[in-house]
Length: 285
Ligand SMILES: [Zn+2]
View (tube, rainbow, N blue to C red):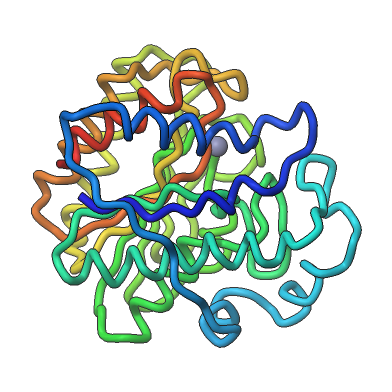
């Protein structure tokens, strides 16, 4: 399998912020010190404004260079525009590799699924997966589904893909929780599967299985996975109840759909993130 990463993505941080560089460095180290799956490491290519502007307004792209925090948990950093662009570039590369039949995971930061068409928020600056979906649709893919298993609702992805021809969004997440959206399905193509805080693990797994079943019925040509690992029972940011083996199961279920797919790292803030990613990748492989 191929993993897209770039150590440069660890080049920004704010003390005490949960979305920290160690999420990536520790995961790379774990994946390099195992021999259960063989990994080819690649770095992201470049991305054009045109590709980003399919998902975002020009004002939002310009805002990334203005040195002011976006909200209380989304700080401004020097060069955050470049970090965000590299993460989106990795998503586009993942799209193309998946369409060529490759097994592919993007291990980058910042994450993206909270970034709306016009606003950076929730640790997210640009919406990596939404840009990738719109790139796929603009370059020949007819039907693409997003499967978002981050414990938080992918409000930004929903905002950008709402009623978009050819795209369907499936999000399984805790509700109520940040960012407060995702209680019900909206529009023609955004399907939300809320799970109550601290719901039993069996309930969480059954909800994931139901969403995957609905996704399969949509019969997409390509699946884009927002892979967040913060529904893990010991994650500090939410009250999910999943275990490492459940992320392995998710990887397996996606593989068994026999539809090309790629995964992008979204959240996941526990110290066990590297083990959770490895478990997922073993399922995907
Ligand atoms: Zn999250």
